[in-house]
Length: 230
Image (cartoon, rainbow, N blue to C red; front, top):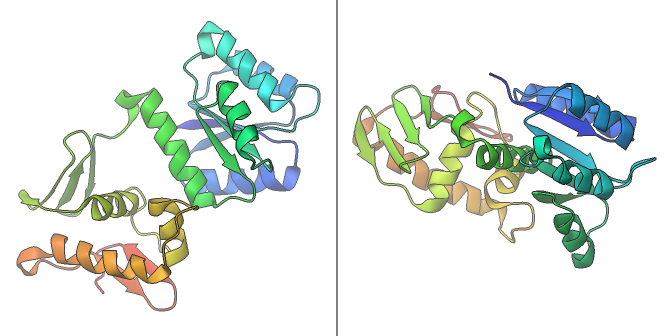
């Protein structure tokens, strides 16, 4: 079942952009353009998560988040606040209102989607895939174990996160910048060439024994998990 997300955003261009990218990543998306409309939609159907703009007409995002947390039916509903306010005090206010996460505009779409998947997994772990598979490769999330053809592989923590990111989106080409955002986080002070280093380590770990290379290097674009080969 596709996870559902309610996007509460009063800027039409940003709302459209979020819908496009979320649907491309396999989410069902509904939209509300102010707090009152959001409350009506929540009463009709509970989504798996809410992306909530801070600055909304009628009811602010913070007040809406507080109302969500006060309602027993929505108390466990994951909420991510989107805002241009990036000061530490604003982050604290956002999290104190009951938000599960806080993303500052402008933001990386890939990072936002990774955070969205994370809050949904934490809130409803039973709905998350326990094992991610591609070809003869399997990544067990609960056991933190990777196998290929039934043989256990040994990956470092960063290679494990990198592989997981690629396994969740097979066939899609990611630039080095997108991989940095999705795996290390947008605020990480990491050089682009670091991605190449960890891709090489990941290839060495999963292609052990002369197995076919399932990570494709796309010249001038980035990397993809698709089994075509480097």
